[in-house]
Image (cartoon, rainbow, N blue to C red; front, side):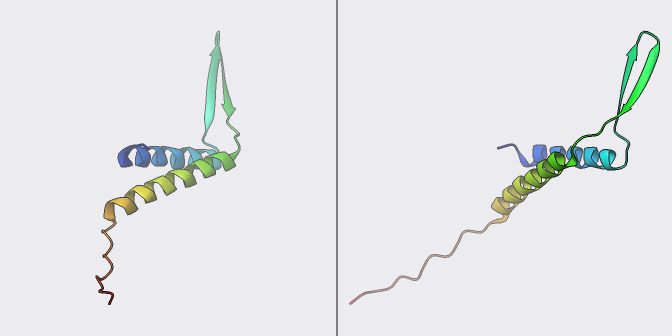
Length: 80
């Protein structure tokens, strides 16, 4: 599993990409000879949303593991 810092970086990048897609700012630009063309990128947002949810889950798992306190042991009993 990736480190917490790596996951948080990926999450920030994925959320920025989703924002760019949703606001129409995601474009690709090509140039052939002297002709430059820009294309709007239209992708299925569902895959990106699923990826973001997965990253959030992984970050949550790492954060929960870091703050988890050891459980208490059961009381010791004597059986007669």
